[in-house]
Image (cartoon, rainbow, N blue to C red; front, side, top):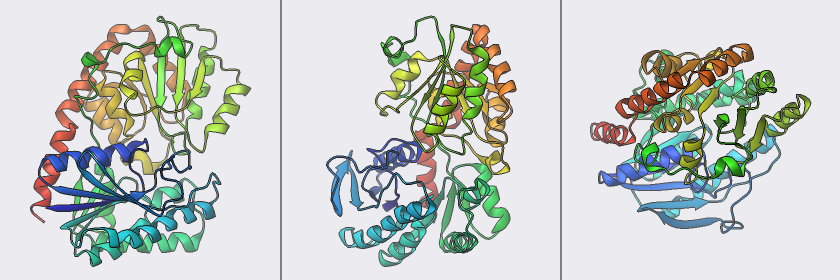
Length: 407
């Protein structure tokens, strides 16, 4: 079986889709699938082409037995919709051109969305390479972009919704990262065949028993007695990270409770401004670290805060950062209602839920978990057991492989 994965995002970039697709590719390779990847020159989230890739129109490399083809992409730190569209469509065009470097045929072409517009390339390449199209939806675009106010242009939205429908109907399978995504698609397009392809975690890589303690705390100004709450991920609009800063303001006079926001993204300057205005010396905002370093950071923190904004579109969302935290036996304070709450709080008993964007509720959850070490310990233990039973990457890949053989 030959599979081509088409995605704008892939390692050495760091981020949720990058890790998820790479881990899936490696495991499908181990199951005997010949996996190739067509992706962009690495640039995300800094929006700068990495050293060694600058000025190149096409590069071929191999990563752990995976054939990786990279084509050019326009990048800019400008956050306007015009700049974003140039970013998306530059890779659409270059990825189509890069088709000449690919093998003649593939059994399947799996396209990662968002960005939705990459679907234009997917349709073209699937036809040229005689491949069955699988459209993998990790975010319901353009619906989420419209509701977040990221895109307001009616013509652009109309065009995007038409493309979305065309892609679903042309695919032999539409895979959704959450059950909510699959249900949303089936409600609007009952004849489309969907499949829940959840995110997961490598339980061997993220294993607290195999990770040694580091000097990360001391290097970042924390003591061994501090109770550290971590948010690690994109500093974006959807996350509503202001809730953490406003909750942190209630602990300014508690020298033992600290907050770390680790990441980069469009909201970073705004968050730094709020931190300054509220004089939050108990909050640090730092750059993201590599995947290799992440287990060592998680080893030394006490709890994770995982928020999203209070929007109906997020009732079917499952932030990927949940899995690594739980695998490392870190309890989560989850500000995400709907499917994530049902899975990880109600069923898994892996943390404490707080109402999205409600810093008073988050303050209560912080207090509860920081003063009850036994509760914190037990929630962490529950978390690793739960993701092992339900979100193990090995099982996820085997199930998908079995599904592909039926198509």
